[in-house]
Amino acid sequence: MKKSYKLRDLDCANCAAKMEAAINKLPQVEAATVSFFTQKMTVTYAEGVDEAEALAQIKKCIRRVEPDCEVIG
Image 1 (cartoon, rainbow, N blue to C red):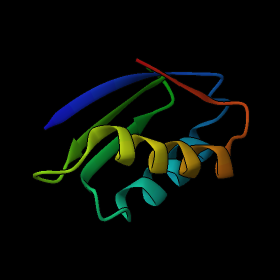
Image 2 (image 1 turned 180 degrees about the horizontal axis):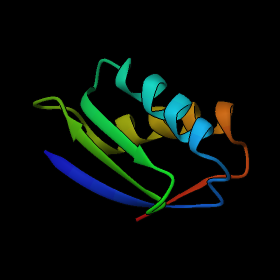
Image 3 (image 1 turned 90 degrees about the horizontal axis):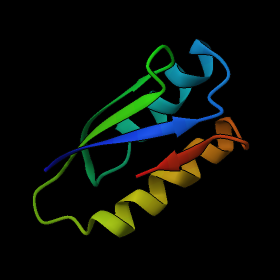
């Protein structure tokens, strides 16, 4: 399942790259891209994954890199 999310307060491209690398290491995620320019994140979840649980793990990764960044949607 592929989902897109809007990001708020993503401050730099380097932070976006760090977030993307951390999210791609999660077992619930098949692929993820984080774009600083569009302020969006696209995630392809592994088959049978609980989206809410996986999104909670993704938000933890984001907060470690950029504490003020919010996931919307």
